[in-house]
Amino acid sequence: MTQVVVHANPDLLAAATAARLVTTLVDVQAEKRSASLVLTGGRTGIAVLSHLLAEPARDAVDWSRVDFYWGDERFLPAGHPDRNETQARAALLDHLPVHPSQVHAMEPSDGRFGDDPDRAAEAYATQLGAPFDVLLLGVGEEGHTASIFPESPAVYETERTVVAVRDCPKPPPTRVSLTLPEIRRAGEVWLLTTGDAKADAVGEALGGASEVRIPAAGAIGQRRTLWLLDKAAAAKVD
Ligand SMILES: O=C1O[C@H](COP(=O)(O)O)[C@@H](O)[C@H](O)[C@H]1O
Image (cartoon, rainbow, N blue to C red; front, side):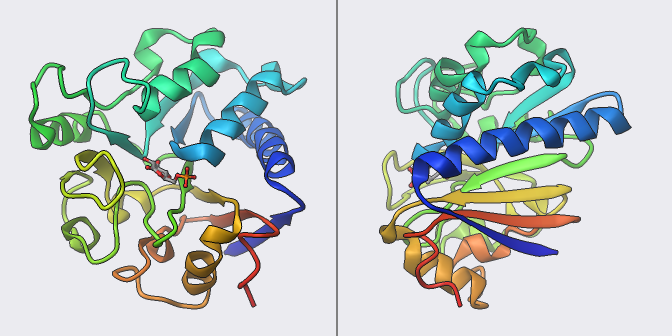
C-alpha cells in the first residue's frame, strides 16, 4: 500500500513525522521484543529527529528496545559534521537512554577498514538480519534516495544488501548505502522530503518513473510505503 500525506510546511511535517514515529514504534514493541529503525540524513531527516527529542510522548517508546541503523552514510572520518551519524547523534541519539550496542553506524573513512568503502559496506552487511520495521529515507532533487543516485551502478544492484558508492554528484563523492533490494525488505518505508526543488522528483516517482531514472521510485515497503511531504514538494503529485 502506498500512501501520500501532505503537511502545510516543513516544520509541521517534521513534528507530525516525529509523533507518527512514536506511535509506530510503540505498536511494533507491543507486538515483539524490539524494534528496528533506519535513520536518514538530510535536512528533513535530521529535523524529524530534533522534533522527536522534543516530542512529549517520546518516552512512550522503550528506547532500550530499539536498534538504530542508517540507510546511507557519507564516507568521512568519525565525528565529521557531515556524517549522517554525527548529525543524528547530536539531534537525538546522544540524548536517549540507548546502549552503544543498539546504534549500528556505518564505518567511517578512518575506521577499522581505513579508507576502503567496499570493506565498510561488506562489514555493514554482516550487521543486517531480520527486515527492518521502519526505514526512513530522504529524496534528492534528482531523485536519489539513501545514496542510490540515478543511472549509477548502485541502482542496478540486485544481490548485495549494502554497497560502496563512488563519484556521487552530491558531495561527498564517496558513500556507503543500503541497496533497493534491502530497502524493499522493510515493513514500512517512509520517504520524507520538503521544498519545491524536490517537486519534480516526487511527481515523477509517484507518477511511475523507473527506479533507474528516479531511485526513490524503487523504495517500497512490504506493508506500507508512506510519502511524507510538505505542500511544495507535493506540487506535482497528481
Ligand atoms: O546526502 C543525503 O541527502 C539526502 C537528502 O537530503 P536533503 O537535505 O535534501 O533532505 C538524504 O536522504 C541522504 O541520507 C543523505 O546522505
